[in-house]
Image (tube, rainbow, N blue to C red; front, side, top):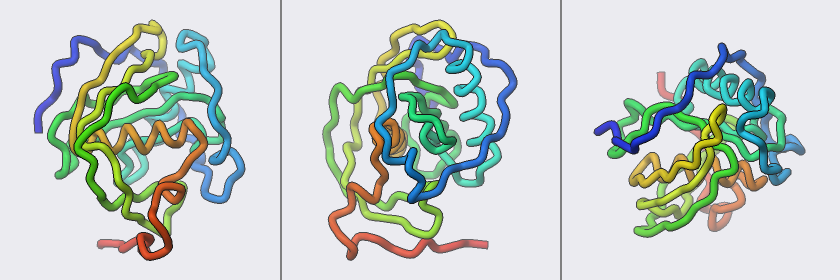
Length: 182
């Protein structure tokens, strides 16, 4: 795994608070997010809260605003240390992110904090280019990534569009009870 040199860094954020995670079928999970002003103090605090909530959630590699009850286009990602990670940009938050390019589509197993009892087989691009805005500065950044980080970004962007991985599985045969390892 390597730390990607993207030429940008997440600006300093205030201390974050841990928020409750909304579980399906919570209505906000189906709401497409509205674009935000990344310099708005409420957005900056949400960015910090997403990272704080993600950090205390075992196995969590990303968290979208909808998952903490806010229908905005903001999410956090951190795939550091995950065994399926190749390219890694560390912990970051993007606002108003969109997928610019995706290729090398493969099916893989996904789970979600908001759907704690199931996993599903979802087809996602393994090479990805995403553009978004950093909180605080509003700097426009382009994230070029692959493998597990690419999957995590698509999963979180889906959340900001009001979709869950359940909306992308091919059918009931592609859903599986989550296995708990101790």
